Structure formats: structure tokens, C-alpha cells
Image (cartoon, rainbow, N blue to C red):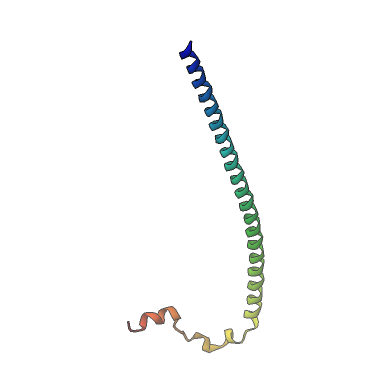
Length: 99
């Protein structure tokens, strides 16, 4: 009878310990899920913002391309015969410098 009582106490303690561990585990999982959800929301907001910025930059690029086309039509320098003189690009000049 004495041994059975000890076994019962041990089982109760083990169950209680297991219950507490399970609660801790569930709480940890919930916290992890909450953190992932917050991160998801933040990334969604950032994505929306970046898409908006891409749209603005695309519009600006279209506008500047139109301005450049319009300018090329009237630019006297583009129609000048001296325009055919080639000027070395800066990146090719660095290859010519002594080391």
C-alpha cells in the first residue's frame, strides 16, 4: 500500500510537470505565431510602399524619356557635324594610366 501511494504521488507530480511543460510549449508556439504574423504585416506594408515607389519611378522615367525625346528634336548639338568626334569614356581612360 505504501509503495502504491508513492507511485501515485510520482504520477501526479509527473502529470503536473508535463501539464506545465505543455502550457509553456503552447505559449511559446503562440508567441512565435504572433511574431511571424507581425513580421508578415510589416513586410506587406513595406511591399505596398515599394510597389508605390516603383510606380512613381516608372512614371518619372516615362516623363523624362519624353522630355529627352522632345529635347533631341530641337537640340542643335545633336545636329552638329562636330558630334562625330569620339571622346574616350572615363572608364577607358583609367586603363591607360600608369600603375
